[in-house]
Image (cartoon, rainbow, N blue to C red):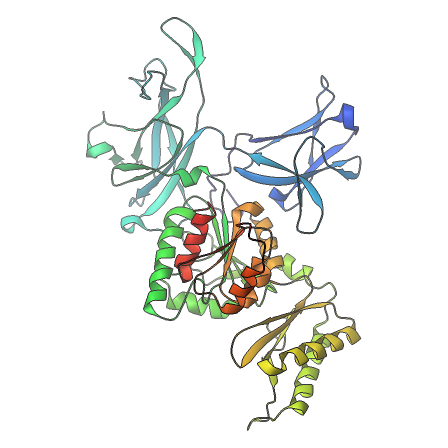
Length: 516
């Protein structure tokens, strides 16, 4: 169960990864382990094996790829016999892949209000046909396990999706020739609600049971079992721009958003994946959008706003994502604190004001006395960002003035330009901010491997985010500036340019990257 009270059905209790430090060969008396599954924020001690002299530790990790390093007698070190990968900050780490232990994952669509249980037994499947026989000699006996609410907000027939994970115990089976061996197991089960109601195949009597003949994930709905292989794969994360990428302004755009919602809630979120919106909207503007598109727009797990200067985590309001309203958010204080380095809001305001005054002196002002630049955000709401709207023909001059003024004040900042047409956006943000850095922060908060996190966008202000090392998708309706940028990038397949528009293009990108 996570900090929000949500059961994560991928957080296996069986150790899935073993980390070993060859002390006799590499040296070291005290060996600690750190990895990106905890955001590098925890050191785990390795234990000395007196027989081999090596240090090792076993850890329970969801399936996926992880980066790690050893702290050996106070010095960070890598083990030479494991693959390495370069981190976003340029450092090098060892990398490993954790595989899921043998298990059955059952996702159940129910309308019961009361607690739901899976009643199950594991029986030998060694009859050569994948069948479990009568289960007498090879059975583990009947057990009862409570089902847990999933991450998904999908509402099958007004109910909810529940889930349970059953690990294969692989008991030793005595065959007819008295030989002992481990056998593939078959899961036999039925559902009950603890109040006398049962769900069995065909609505039949007590002798009827559901069967899953092979390890894996399955959906059970309306008496029908279907394979659900997504549940056996590593959790993914989608970090997507909103306007022009997930949502639009017409019926066709709403239809694409609805298609995406059906996929996300019925597949990705159900199997434990995470959704993040990386948007130029403020948190208040987002909740207004969510209210207007409540039936078709999925609620994200996290929200990145103001060109990556604010990160918000969904407040589950004492429940889970499945029950949260999406109207309550908690700002990530750790992210805000990390942006303070090198930043001075007062100096950034003064620099932006100097741009306004400079361009006013160089251009004809309008009836309201406005020149070629005016305020969009003076940092009152977003203290690590100031933003201007600048006439396109004066954009380069505005950037030059802003850089010079910031240099005078010793402010280390990023300048980000975006937009189309006669007027453009000019954002000045803290040096550690930006859509890509915020993405990487959120990815590590949720413990998602880099190759399992796809970004998606449609405009020039998404270039920083799309320019990272993870898989990326440009939707089919992308602005020319972004499409032209894509043509300058190495054609390695890391960046997919979808044919489909808007949210349909995002789903296409997930599929083409093998993350569907």
